[in-house]
Structure formats: C-alpha cells, structure tokens
Amino acid sequence: MRNQNDTLQQQKRIVEELNEKIIKNFLDLIVLNDLRTRPLDGYSFIRLIHLRYRLLLSSGTVYSLLYSIERKGLIEGTWRERKRVYSLTDKGKQTIEAVTSAPSPIKEFVKSLLAV
Image 1 (cartoon, rainbow, N blue to C red):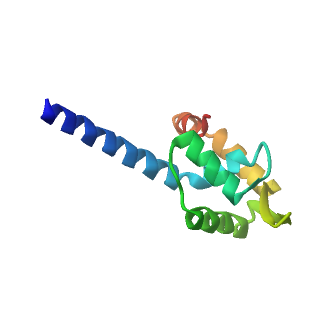
Image 2 (cartoon, helix red, strand yellow):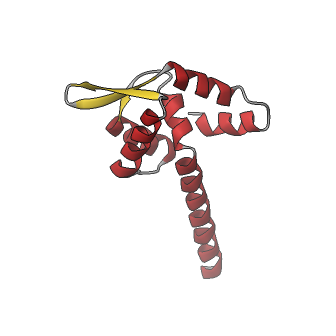
C-alpha cells in the first residue's frame, strides 16, 4: 500500500512540474490572450494565473515578462491609480490572432492551453 501511495505522489509531482513548465513557457501567450478582453495590472495577472492554473508566480517572473512583451511592442503599460495597467497594442492583437488561428495541431494545443 505504501509503494502505491508513493507512486501516486510521484506521478502527481511529475504532472504538477510539467504543468508549471508548460504555463511558464507559454506565459507570454497567456498574457496576450487575457489582455484581449480587458487591461490588467501585474498583480491581477498573478491572481488570475493562480486561480486558473493553481500556480503561484513570483512578481519578478510576471513583471519581467510584462516588460519584455512591452519592449517588443505587443502590449502597452499606462499608469492608473499607482498601478501600471497593460493593454494590447495592434501588434499584440495581430500576434495573438495569428497564434490562435494557426493550423492544427498547434491550434488545438494553443486552444487547450488558453481555455479557461
């Protein structure tokens, strides 16, 4: 019984690690997709990722990603009430549209990743 529990725990850890790896590797697409519906600040994005994927990201991870995406011209940050709020640029809209309309099986993977 103990070996079975150990095996199940190990499998659970492996799946959690894989999930975290996938989310972190595609975080830029998740950001762009979430910004399609409304502007978000960094803290709100951290909270959304935690609620949706059960993954708690550090503020350093999120803010460095947001700055990187902003430097590429995909998002634009503006100050509102002491918060930097990000929204998609036209280039960002075109990018997420290109990704979400990609041919299968890429499209299917991206759709499953971005599904709420």
